[in-house]
Amino acid sequence: MDVSYKGKNLEFEWAEKQWKDPLTGMDVVCLSPKTQPHFRLNYFRYNMFTDDGKYVVFIGADGLFEGVDTGRRVWARDLDTGELRDLGSIPDIPKSLWELFALGSASACQYTVGFHDHFVYIMDPSDPEAWAMLRINIDTGERDHIVPSEKIAGMGAVCSADGRHIYYSTPRDRYDLKSLQEFVRLDLETGEVEHLFSNAGEESWHLDHPNPNPADPNLVMVQYPDPNAHRYKAHQSIRVRDLAAGEWVDIHHRPPRYMNGQHEHWNRLGNRIYTHEWAWLKMHWINRIDLDKGENLWFPTVPNLGYSHHIFAAPDESFIIGEGYEFDYFSMPPDIRLKMYEHLEAGDRLSKWFFHYLSGDYTCPGETIYMHELPEETIMNNDDVWHEFNENYTKDMEPFHKLLRDNRELTIKVTNVCEFRTLLRSEKHLGYRLESNAHVTPDSRWAVFQSSSEDDFFEVWAGRIPGRT
Image 1 (spheres, rainbow, N blue to C red):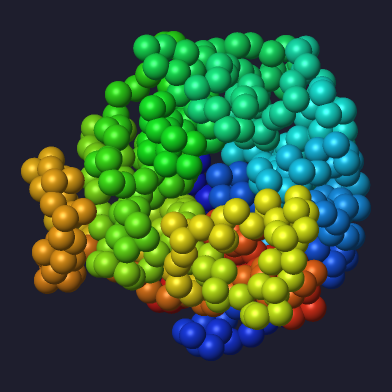
Image 2 (image 1 turned 90 degrees about the vertical axis):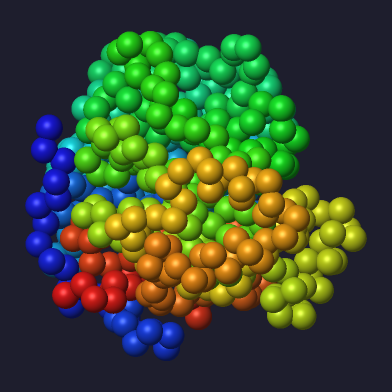
């Protein structure tokens, strides 16, 4: 299967709004149209672009209410000409699910574009107890409404490489990592649901982030938190399942116990996995797993440099995009912080939407999109380095930090791309989680991210990558 992008270099001369970034001087353009006031960026592991480089897909909203988008509509934009295709309205989120979306994803726009077709797959929770799947053809606007043969109160939109199945895991108690879950797939032609495996075993674990391989429909990656961890101290890792063989692919080792697995995804060819690991926000690593070579390498940054929450590898893998936020609530303007305290004191459930911002564990500096370039070699290429880190880092981190600073050529090169605005700069956006979820355009020349605008709208922007002409 050919999984290479075929689109030409993009310039976005049609963009209706743009600026020169004050941090880097790079061009930044607005991709989302004026047809609706609010356009969210999709979650980092949900594909936004057709692989021929022709279209980007958005979900627009007319309004924001209690943590979710209302008045939703799907749009596709020609990346070369800027031409818009109106793909029609989609159901709003039922009121009974507002809190679920506000707490769990902060956005009601989870959808995905097929890896190798011109279809958009959108979850439809119109019936809170029996979610369905909406499939829209970008070229023709034709729609299919696919109802699973078994009722499910929760569904993702991730699609298999061959466009035949949607993968998801059955719901679990939000605060119980050990509750039984099953990994299932929905046949898009028949509506049949097939149960493939569960999280039961010697130790039950929480099955999350279903992430299909973009080239091989038989491989899927899932997040694998430590089954013995406390809910808020889950030590995350990954597992890869070969669905045809019905067994796990043993390619990943859980990182040292002081590190936290954060986010993970496949490269476009489907032969590598990139994961992001961090320790107390002072240090972070990108873990590259090569399935063809059986290689598992860890690439560190120097301390306190370019911290990112999500990461996303460019299609040509010449760099990895990440975004750093101000999760620190002390960075809020005083009037906004006071308003938040009023909600807390009143017992308003809105306050629950701030749980990411109120924890010191999530404090990190800046509002910046970063480019991470991996070195040819890494200083952390054997288990001895990990053993020493695991034994000594929590006792005295400075020797390890000095080792990295003295060997910068063996660490990740971090370059600023552009700044973006957090979503806590106005009262209107209180209750909406801050995740810019940076993606990369098909030509590997622009970082695409979510930001709030001066007009208090959600918008999607693209910042030109330094050095890419």
